[in-house]
Length: 400
Image (cartoon, rainbow, N blue to C red; front, side, top):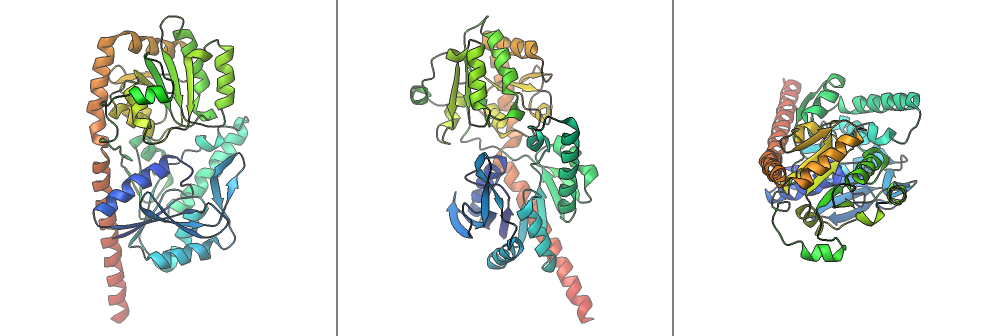
């Protein structure tokens, strides 16, 4: 089959959409399918690049203020550019990843051809409204965003989302069937085994218990709460809090660590290459996440695959990954004493760490990327077959 992915965010902006496509795309190619991607170009011109072994066709775009790696498609000639790229690739099925300008344009120009289109939703309004201070404006913007989402995704034949939580969030807004399918994790890349010596040296990570966070260092991730809890825990036990990632909140959090008197025990690594990333999980004692707007959390999956107990806020879809008192702890957003207690429990108690580690490894199996691959292959084949059947019927009616 010829499978076309469409996304308004892609490399070099690293996020959940990019990781989903760049992992499942090559696996589909290994199975004999032809895969391509339409995404924003890194320039104001049409482009064609090989990224992760996939043909990526870029439509002209401009950088977003403060986020230069995030780009938005230039509206002028967007539909004609998208039409040209679709005609060039001739997909059997189109898989859009969001409802923003490129995805919307693809849906609109496809009305002429009727190529089956499915969509995956990675979107939660909170990820875009986190910096708005006014609750009134948050509600208004959220309403506008959901309205735009429904207008595009109601034209699709099927919609998937990574969790049941995400599916329940959108089912009432959509006409198409909504299925929960995990984005998946590569269990060969992320596992508990391996020598962390070189990575410890490279990033100056001491031989201490490691509380780990991996992800964007942005406001909605609520890392200030975690830092306050870490400051309390460090009064009782010795460990290091390692923050892997970058974002607009990094400088403010570094300042907060100084104010709390824990700057020497908090390590900000910034961006870490994919080759090094698995070793941070291997050296970890526990993974922590306080973000209230997660439809899945790839980093949490990576941590579980590496055998880490998880300390997670009881919000979004995190409760589907973390079973309280089993493979980790769930805490109420803003409950800093509870976060502190969870940190101390896992770091101090070897028996608890061992039990929770084993449970993380048990629960992660169903998120194996190979299971995700099989699920989407079935969807693509089914959608393509239905579309072909409908075309045959139309032709027969026309010739009757």
